[in-house]
Length: 362
Image 1 (cartoon, rainbow, N blue to C red):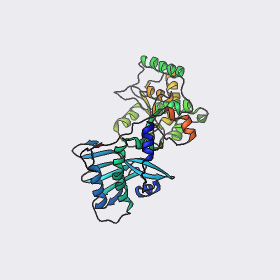
Image 2 (cartoon, rainbow, N blue to C red):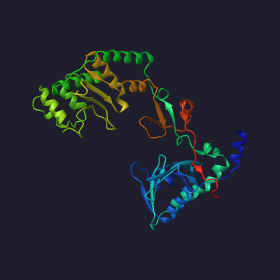
Image 3 (tube, rainbow, N blue to C red):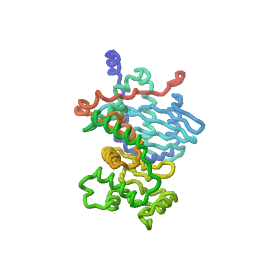
Image 4 (tube, helix red, strand yellow):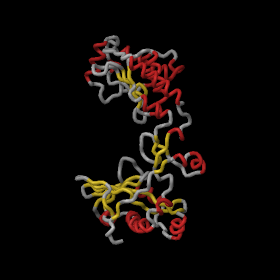
């Protein structure tokens, strides 16, 4: 390994682009690509993908992962990964953590740096091959590399094994009772929701009626649920539920979340004669556990099918992706603090390269 490092250190490769230039050229946006209509850039991409076999292809599109662009950042030479997808004879280029480009043929005037991106990538490929990918290991920064880490290494507090086993046993005994309920009224639904609120929010629920609790913490889009005339009528509530008029609203999201969804309490229906408690945003995982425990104590017919997964998360056994988009993500910062606390616990992904076409002339 030392010989390889010496050999790589002797190689001089001076990137022509800077990191801030790529940020400007790509214009970071998660859901939209910056459109470039320029045949010269288009042809450079065609030349680039001709050097490697597609990583994935079907009858609609082809994808190439693991291309690398050398750039300067804070005075250092680094490389950043990007991918290319060809769809209907157009190209979509995705730069990890930066943004996306949509390349078409055309004569639109563009900054010369767009051509430089793909010229530099082409210029860098022989060096990747010559060093047998070792140069990538030395130049891809750890805040850009991806991997995974268990939650227990980054969470401030994890659930103890004893508590985990106790809750699961408590829930298992609850399920064995096979509690069922066929129909409920709106008042009954709000009273069960109130059990959840009181368990999770304690003193904050003092002197609040079940309706006021619902209005305080729920999504607010009740889909006409609160407009039911007779709140004590099981028939009216079940007819409203079966009608589907509420679809598109969130009457059962009893804890609202601006990110994804919070906590849902679904009422019973014919196929499932019990309430269903679900959590989507795990920022509410501890509130969810408090609700589960209280519903069991109150002998409410309910199920929480995600309970095991939530407990695994709170116990720190769930993996977080590192520097990548996922439900649970951890961003690594290249600093002494992060290196001391987290580095040894991260399982870094293997650095991949495309399958090069060996006969291709460079």
